[in-house]
Length: 196
Image (tube, rainbow, N blue to C red; front, side, top):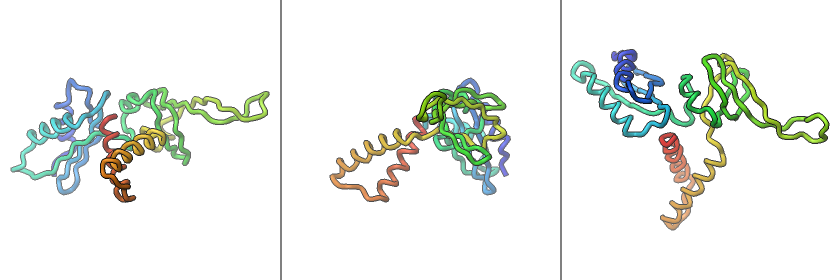
C-alpha cells in the first residue's frame, strides 16, 4: 500500500516556494489517493492539475497501481490548519461548538490555541426599553470548537443562484425542473469553492 507520509512529502516538495500547502492526504485500501491542498490566495484548477502530474510522475505504476485525486479545500469544508484560519480573517465563518451551539460571525484573529470572532446580536442595553443590536467579541478556545468553515451567506447564494437560474431559463426558453435546479446549484457551489 502507498504511504500517505510519502505522498505528503512529494506534494510539499512540489509546492516549495509557492503559496500552496497540503491540508490532508488520504490513501484508501485500494490505493485511492486523495490530496487536499489550499493556498494563501486561491487554488486554480491548473495548479491542481500540475501538482497531480508531478505526484504521479514521482510514483511507479508498474510497482503499485493507484488512483490519484488532487483537490482544493473548498467552501463548506472544515478548516484544519492555522494557515486556513488566518486566510479567512475578516470574513464570515460558521463555527460549531462542541457544546452544541453554532455561530455565524466575522473571524478577527486566529492563534494555535483560539480563534476570535465578532457578531451582532440583540441585547438589553441599560437605559433603553427595547433590545438593540450590539457587537459581541468572543474568544473561542480551539478545544471547544467542533468545526469551523467559511460561511456561505444566504444573500450571496440566493443572488448567485437566482441570476444563474434565470439566465439558464431564458436561454432554454422554459422553466427548470426541481431536479435541474438542484444540479445547477451543486455546480454553482463547486464553482464558488474554486473561485475563493
